[in-house]
Length: 440
Image 1: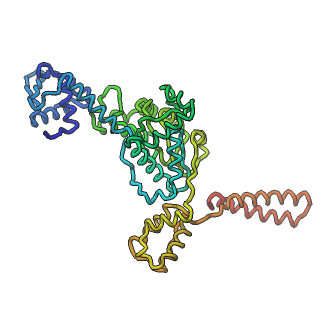
Image 2 (image 1 turned 90 degrees about the horizontal axis):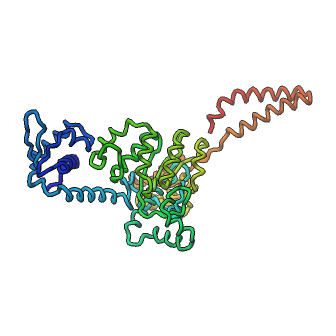
Image 3 (image 1 turned 90 degrees about the vertical axis):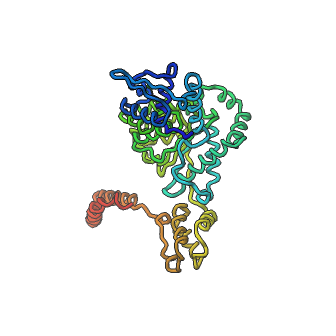
């Protein structure tokens, strides 16, 4: 028997829930209300079920129609129907445990994890201790790939009979009496108590946290995909996401945040937040509240002073550039030596221009995969990641302060030549000050 689409299955379940002696006399409005759809939409679905042979519709003039289940549609009413629904909900909820609530946004190849095993081990240890962690590093240093590799490894470990992550947590609990006490307390699921263990990790990945409202809607969608989204007044688990989104999108940001946090409360969620450098001051209360119900592992290119309160809540891990040997290994895992006439020249140029930045290495090495590189093309390889810039703004500010100080010294010494020279310097600085904040 072919499986019914989700929308038709929900409509059939609504009829089964209202059936009495094989017949359902409920109105379209009563059948449509739990599903959050209109009566017209419900009528179309019931007519489609009639066409497929799941029920027969007895139409009465001036009265609600009577829906009778056919032998094809019978067998799941009453207690059996209740058991079926519980199994469906349990199966959806279990799909989140020990796995992504959504597929990884981008694939993560083993080549891009060269030299990052120590950071991955630190992340595993911090998760075992329930410690919020923030990866910090410039663009292209590999923060996003580290996050994806961490979640992929954690999912695989959670599916094994004896996951190393759980074994490590067990050793931590055995080694400290405080760990045993916290694990035995079901109320210790807060950020302030890092000793609480995570028994069934559920991962939610957000690539962008700004703007905050679309980010909260994305979280709600991930929860809906895992069967964990509960919205008062509707049966969200039986509805398509687009229908649920239409019901919750008009809500205010505070209401959306409350909805998401209620569904995540005491559920061992691990929230992966990338690009946290885009956080604004108005988003801080919502992120602080999310950190109260979920363990947050994030990444940021830089730490802006406007979100300093948020950075204090994290243990920070600086993601360094690759060492020379690691960069060389990554280079030849991506490039094809057969397409390079002078491998030594190619290697020296790429390592010099990349500055240990994995994205820069991969970008330049990929050119050797598409076409053979001549000596001239190798010498012409360039990348901004390896370029070092000297900030001139502090230098100009110091020179300006010296010019002003020189004028006062000239006045005190009554030295006209020094005063005129300082005046010329002050005039030059007045012209250059327009460009001070544009030279970095």
